[in-house]
Image (cartoon, rainbow, N blue to C red; front, side, top):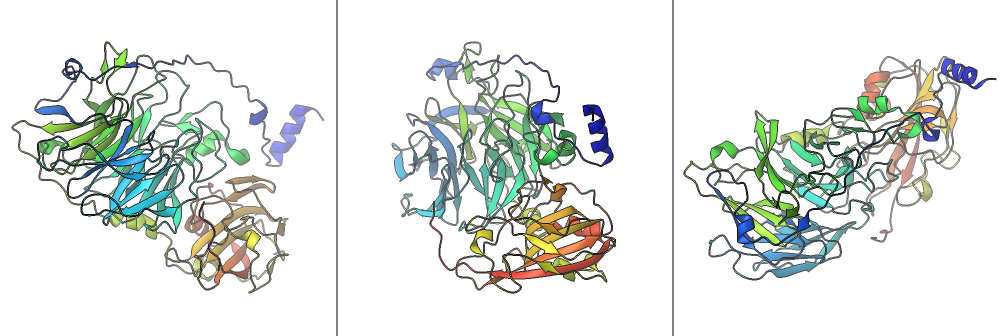
Length: 594
């Protein structure tokens, strides 16, 4: 059979041949710059050249700080900042209110690769490359003994600078950057925002397809979460723009296959035979872009009470600056102008840290926080200075805003929670019955450890009795004993061919399977695609896991980003048979923290 005839035959059979990995005809070239402006000292002459809005001043708050990175400010005004290179957290205070730190910094914590900081309920939370620690803030600002809350966060790779923030719902939102410039991650938690409980004992993927979102914050009026994502490198001086995204639960933001407003990255290929066009259809485009390679860092909505009222509700962000663009971009603080809750523009606010016609720099802005007096504090990780940006003009100051409302985040987290199991819902009404079996799981008996997420986490082999007229089968695995997500969805699979009545053990954990060809796997409650094994809290009574199999009279056109409710909506009126296998799992031994 000739190759072209074979392709035609495969097309008739509805089979998409996977050819892109072997070469798909792409032939592109880019001009790439590597340009690193030389670091020089921030002399008074250099600082005098800063471009500052009328009425504002930029002065050192503290100097000689080394690799100062992320800033967090306590309610009493104490300033904490991390140092990645030194692996510690330092404390500064301005008790006399003169706009400068009173004394040399005090070390309050030492942990390798310390970076992200957040303050919540009297504790300072610290993110390293793979861990989260917390320590009680003492009266003098120092910390009590650090407690390891999480020790198994994903490996860092290219983007080790982890950050965390507390949302208005009291939950941790943790950014895990990608391990690479553009690749299919082997750990689904990379290139995401994770949402987890303050004690670190439960977490889900909140949003995915984010190359490296270090800066994010909640709009004080709407309660919506916004973030700035780093663009892909090596596409030229002007590509890709830095992205401002409205971050919402369950959404995918394009990386690594789609960027900007829908441009396709030429080198990569989605897994499982998904086309880039399909990946684009499943992804949310950026809301607004900014100059390529500017490198967005910490971001804060202004809720202080000293800047003019026109800044209230706008956001500020640091741009650390490019190394792969000529002329250089970034090296500034930008203002994100929000109008009626939507971003209208991103413009320079404080610039001029690039000096000598762009060949040198006096600062690489990273940390950004709002001080107790309403000024901005900006950390420079190159020359080790924290700058204070204050308004000294005559315009009336803003009144300040309260904590962002929690309803938006709570509503997103509550979707699909507190509902009946799939087989008990109206969407799955059917007269036909099928039996579900497994070679490793007996009905109402314990599930072997290898199928749990405490161990191998491999999906079990399942089989079921055939249903006449079935065009496809679907699987929904749920745990009704889980809390607070009840029921917890562990597995969604659909478009299992009607000719099949079994699946092998250990299916790939990806959106679309190559074997069996075309089977789709949707978003479970952990935020991943594919099977997520039982992982009840240690010491809980046995949880019950319902492997629910449904026979359908059609093949579904759902994207892999679909969740259980989207799947149930799509199958309503098309279920011609159903059945389940129920197994139990209990974890009695605390696994070691890594």
